[in-house]
Image (tube, rainbow over all chains, first blue to last red; front, side, top):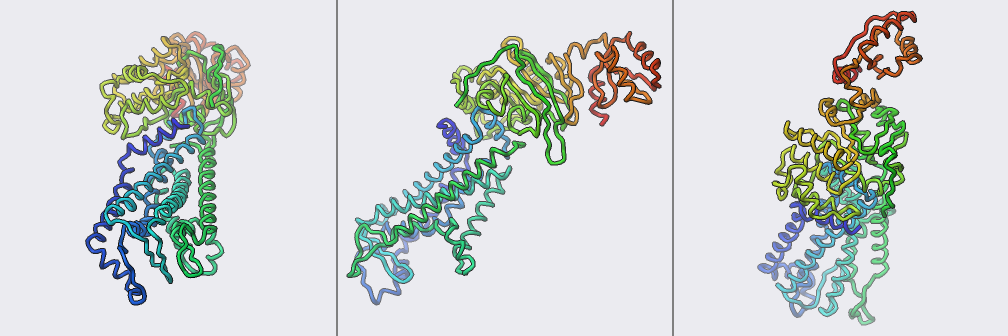
Length: 291
Length: 311
């Protein structure tokens, strides 16, 4: 199996298309960091305009931790689309190229190949996330320095001591990997249904947009299905930055406000991954390879 | 994950029994049966769309047969896929490859999925065998169709398989390339004792290399036989046309002429010595059959063209 994974990784990283996502993420992050470096104070002032009269904040609000949070909010919505570029092409791209029949006439079973392809696509996804973490977190920490993390939520503010922040980002990135792996597995399922590259990529993107809208709309009819949609749970990495407070309304260091919510989301996302990958294996096993 | 591979040389390497494949209402392969013996070059002939590639895909478990059974090396392909495919090398239709990889990288990649380790020297040797050693480090996107075809054949050979299945291997090759591949097929069978199953829509390509020929048309077997016998200049292929073909056929089948019968699906065809043609005519007339004509064909090619253009 390791040989198959190596082969799939080799193919992924020999394709120029693979690097589009890495380039796009780097470009976006650098542009945002550059803008905030030049005009960050004005941006911070705009963020805090509603609370300036009631709250005085000492220190550097616009620090590396906040920049990373802003970047994640912006990018984790769009990174799935970049993941779909590769994941949704893993099987259908080979069917389109005609090379799927070469793979399926080797002594390894179709199940082996599908699993190897999924693992390789997952590794690509994780690498993309590590790249994102490196640029969004570590580069921001280096450029903007570190301080306490000050977050404006819809009707309250959260202040997390800087020594209590880094592990939350680790948790958030691990959570985000589950979200992106769900997208990878969805792309994979779409890929197993088609013999051309474009259809599954567009299909995956459309599915994400469609379910995101359903998850966001506050209509009672959709509220029934919302808990079961993966898109409802994909953005719950933010829960790592909601902190418990004591009776004096002081933040409790090392705490997370709603751990069960994170656990539920991880469970729903994992179930989706299993469901999508299993369905892909069943489809591919039954499929006549005509391409 | 791979089973122990045991194979008795006296067995048929390929044994196909009554396989059919339906795509909706289309019957791509219809009740096809044949056997290929070890060390043979087996020619699988048919027009484009006759069911050759579908049959080959079923042999390689890329397509599931609607009915029938396939055994390779005496084992069911469905139950022993891994151990069987370890011993098989194949190219199927077009030489589709990864445009961003070089020829050597292709061979390294496909050598890696084999149980037996393929030495680097084998990769070099295989590229030399197919005449691609001078382009080994070039990306496939710079290759002509003929070069891709050669690389496809190299992929099929790199792990030294016992059975080689080549689907239209000379597609896109120039005359020299066709001659090279023909020599390679002959070398593989004669010198290395491999069994080669080669398909083509051109009889002229097959008749020079194959020990045995099977002609397929619209998914059905039309004729099968030893190439030398089918191409024997002492024998002529004749088509009998009568007012009552059913009765004529029953007389032929029941009598001594049955040994010469080639096909009864697209007309009554026999391959028989020239001297036997008047005897056949006499026999039919004596049985009360009105013979409209006995048309002789000059070669197996005429016959092939006739049966494949009739329907």
